[in-house]
Amino acid sequence: MLLTFRFVSTFIPAVATCAALTIPNAVAAEYPTKPIRMVVPFAPGGPADIFGRAVGQRLTDRLGQLVVIDNRGGGGGNIGAEIVSRSLPDGYTIFLGTPGVLISNPAMGKVAFDTMRDFAPVVLAANMSSLMVLHPSVPARNVKEFIDYARARPAQLTYGSSGNGSASHLASELFKLTAKVNMSHVPYKGAAPAVTDLLAGNINVMVIGVPAALPFVRAGRLTALGVASPQRHPSAMDLPTIAESGLPGFEIANWFAVLAPKGTPAAIVSRLNTELNSILRAAETRERFLQQGFENVGGTPDQLGSYLRTENDKWTKVVREAHIRAD
Image 1: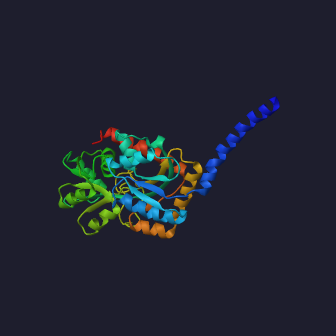
Image 2: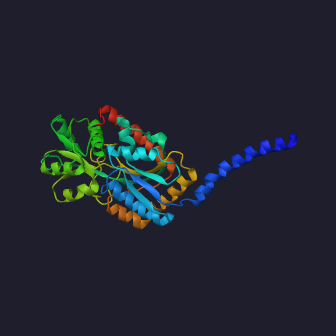
Image 3: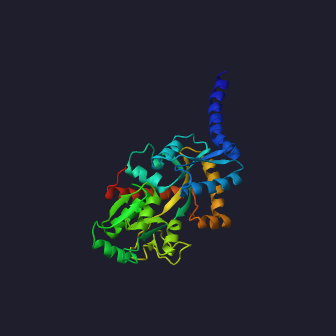
């Protein structure tokens, strides 16, 4: 009996350990067996929703299970992010995050989640380049001229944004800090009313998405200063970047990233990453997304995690130095 007892006491933990190692792999091998929810933290119709639905449809085709888009707008994206951060980490809830939700909002405080602690990175999916544009009444035709003009008129020029802490707000504050100019912020409840006032000349300058800005630039209703991304935009190669047009080192990216709740099995994260990268690499997908203003990226979960840490350091500094607070 003594020998039997010792054998069993040694064997059971070994079996338990083996089971603990194999169960996640078995689950991942069968994954997915039911619909997947992709939480988009904004109302339908915006860029994140458009991109999320396009990716979701293609992911449905590849996985053989429906990917349902769950729009959870409100709180500047905080509501959707919090829902995902508290969801079961089983691969059936994923998140389409943006820099405003994952980086800016936590930097400003008053959020119930921690980007670095509560999410498992899956893939950096795409960038949406932005363009700094002026009302034509401002007599500047490039970044250097505009900096000189603004410095000669401290606090007299106004820039619009789609809201306090939005990507357009933070981009303009980074420009102020980098160029050492002083402009006054005019926040709006969304990009559309801000662009309307810019076109009317009620504000002087704004950073907006390339697809939204280009028609007005081509029509002569707005003056393009430069693209805010590191490279020129594929659909507007004639427009220089802000960095090459007079402000070296300046760059911003309005990106979309897919994440899962922290603790999601690595095998499931890897499967999602593989399928999403296949979608993003496909020539037809790249061309169609580019027409909508999205530049596909892709990469590994580790690369996304590293990128999030870099973005967090960069924009936390901007929020602190510009004294930006949540509404």
